[in-house]
Amino acid sequence: MFSYRHAFHAGNHADVLKHLTLIATLKHLMHKDPGIQFVDTHAGAGLYRLDGDYAEKSGEAADGILKLLATKDLAKVPALQEYLDMVASFNSGGSTRIYPGSPFIMHRLLRYEARDRLKLFEMHPTDHKSLTGNIEQLNAGRTVSVTRADGFESLKALLPPPVSTSGSRRTCVLIDPSYEIKNDYYRVIDCIQDSLKRFATGTYIVWYPIIPRPEAHDLPRKLKTMCTQLKKPWLHATLAIGRATGGDDTGLSASGMFLINPPYTLKPLLNEALPIVAKALARGPGQSWAVESGG
View (cartoon, helix red, strand yellow):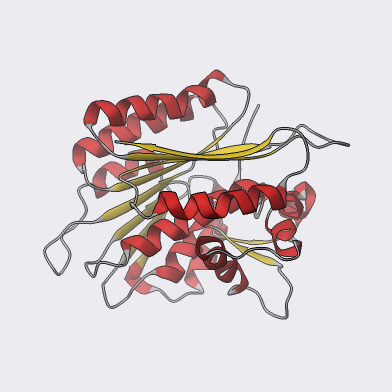
């Protein structure tokens, strides 16, 4: 059974793709002054120790952020540099022991003068407890809220987002469940469909694993069809590091990001960054990257 609990996979190749894309997207959205409501439907613990029990047990950061940082003469194009700078900002002394999850990346980019807000949801009891404790250390007040609830269902009450001080409504939603049960794939589709009905102009970001399972294969295809029918722009990015040439080859080796209403600047940024990332993280046959868009 496939299960993607954030704590076991912190800093791996999928996180590199997810967070590089997330940062580039948020940076673009923040070029406009009005405040934004950010939502993470499956937030995890928010902050991870790469030398902690969970991440150290899986060792996946070695094929992700740690391998990327160890690559000599890495061409640090803008999107990649902003990602690496973000990770570095949570560490000191030249070492990388802490990896920021999506909640802490989003929080770091919040603009208090614009009254941006961050809504975090997490159902797993251990991760929710860790997330709550980690967020409390930020003294973020009402800017950040943490709720132990189903993120799919909770999102409904947040759309459309509240009106900003300038009179506009803006939201950016990250959806990255564990996909532990195949129903998660169907719930993602239903969630996006419902969200677009409630707030058609929001930016919706979906992460998913690329695994030999029909539901995983069908997810981006169904999202493309939906966007085409609704005449919504979309972007689909994938990263595969290839099969390990020796040892265990049972772990996740590829993942994808699907965005609805993506920034127009995102495709060229990813086209510039992903070839460098794919080359740096490649570990064997099957290594690839791709960026496509439509709408």
